[in-house]
Amino acid sequence: AAVIDAVIEMDIDWLFIIGWSQIARSGVLNAPRLGCVGMHPTLLPEGRGRASIPWAILKDLAETGVTMFVLDDGVDTGPILGATRIPLSASTTATELYGKVKQAHRTLIREHWRPLSEGALKAVPQNPLEGSVWPGRSPADGLILPEMSVGEALRLVRATTHPYPGAYWQCGNTVIRVWEAVETESPGVRPWVRCRDGIVEAVRFDRESVDDAS
Image (tube, rainbow, N blue to C red; front, side, top):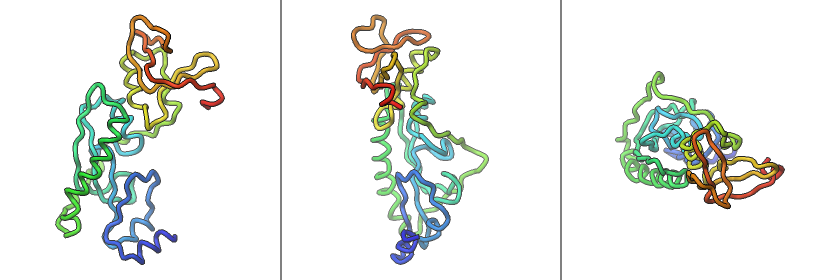
């Protein structure tokens, strides 16, 4: 309530809500005179929902992006103000994509602030029948399974590396938390795991006890 009162008292035209994981309810959305602007790290309407950066890598997309849009009562469903595209490659990591998403926020604001502030930027409604919703993910979803292919395991490592919780496998009472990995035919002294079509070896990793990991 105090936040809503402050927004009303300051007579804000547009309230930018960026990098906030909670859903803004109607009290906040209605507090600014003109509305609230959000950013979502996909090319809406594709990829509404959670874990956008990991999913873009896990889905092996050729590109993703960031969409600037007007927040409404739905989740990532409001009309679009602008978007910028981010190409992906077979080596893109979550760390790299996270940095590009942050830069895209700046780019979108620089490009669209003046027409937005002058009332010249038209918001284009999303088609509610188009697009997709990506589900949330938990740290447990980073488990590398033996039935995975090497490609799937390496993609999981890239998708869940910093700033995310990391991919992992368990050896006895030790969890190997993997931040970077490679395929190998002859594993050495570093931790490795066998997938259905080959071996994945950890390059950067942490060792954790099962109790610490949980």
